[in-house]
Length: 611
Image (cartoon, rainbow, N blue to C red; front, side, top):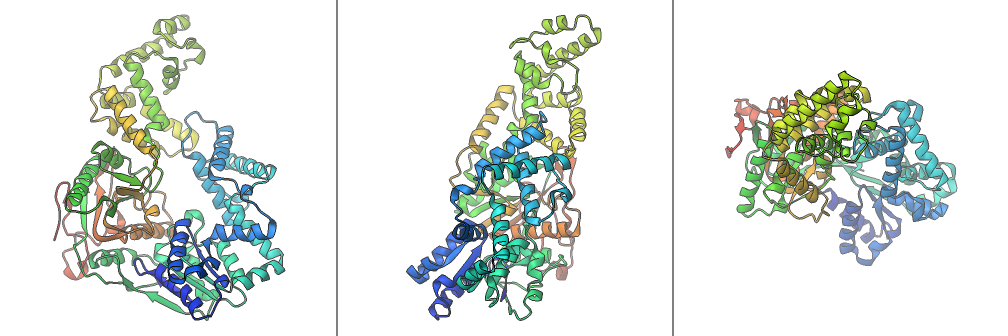
């Protein structure tokens, strides 16, 4: 059976009740039931719900993640131990060492090991040969060398990673029919939650285990498939009834979460996707407050307004835990996070947010400002001496404390180098006479750091737009600070808060990906602009459809109020409204608008629309 379960329609309750009914009606023994989901948290919740209904019988069921269930098979058949699987921390440390060895750029991206690890998982999960896989974060040959060394380390240390669990389990069941038959007999009834997120190899193993009886019950929503980068394939759900022509199909179409306004608008957005099951969801809770669109000058104005609006809801009795602000990426939220910290609004982050002040661009700008303020540390000079390139040798900085007199003496026989050093000295004097914001502008334009960033990006195959945005974000962070010390205090405040252990109290600041499966009374979605939602790298139709699904997932997290936000400028770049909202905004035809459509006029900062 295929159960199409739209957002807020109670899919977890359906799986729980079906599982319990199989046992109560004596159709299956508890030990013959396998319930598979995607996260440990979801598996724990499912286990808890079933235990409440069935009591001790639930302990005999197999309820877990794909990796957990397949690891259990390997452990039973191959005597695999917990120590055989590389831990996340151990894996990251290994990847950091390999990336540093094979891609030893001085200005290395902090998340490059994580991105490399993600691509290794994608390579293994796709079944593509390394020679035919092209990395998006590293030169092709560098990535292949890292992959070969990574696999060699695993083999030498008798370890496997999470991707190997899937590969080895599939290989075991393919090669040993007697083992497959044993597990087919054990798992006579298989229920899969969040089926839209399944990857081809996971599906292949599930199909093998379900045969020959094919008691396979899948629940999911193709409109909420947003994990293609992990290998998920919504096409598997769309093609399920071709694989199983006799399968029944049922749609859960009553939404118990969202108001009618939110549900209707989100349906209008997702209806533009072409490859999907058509569904007609209805809201159980009535129309509710209309969705509102808010347009801001820039992310700073957007963040300030969001904090004011959040405070207003909190003052009116909404607990902060019932509020979420959603972003496309984990770096997009940094301006808001800084504002929340400054104004002491309680929050937690569903994702790890890299501190922008730890970025190599931040360290170089800070070194410029420290030298402008009078520092003569060798480490500061080495950080900036050839950014942009001045052709100053490291050996010119012989001592831990450097003086310009020593630099002039070192190059006394080369007038052209003395001219470069004189220019550096003059630039540092100018930087020291300005507040941080003006100093950073001077570094960008007069010193030539902005041009050097473009050259560096081209030389190392990096996205110049990404580096420029980091630079602009740092400059904006410095805008309210009157002195270097004040900016450093702000940096330390943000860094300390980001490094705190999450306690999950306060409002949620989350990516759209991490918000899946959650619900909140109030949801604000930030930066619904071209280049962000949809992401600028989404070019193919399949990519754009996934981006639209991501926005749909975000919109349907809201129970009572939904705010859609966009900006006219993001730092130095002019931004266009998202194509996903075109046709839903600014129309005066009531039949086109319908309940839940956006207000016809744009709402600017500080104004509200309650129509």
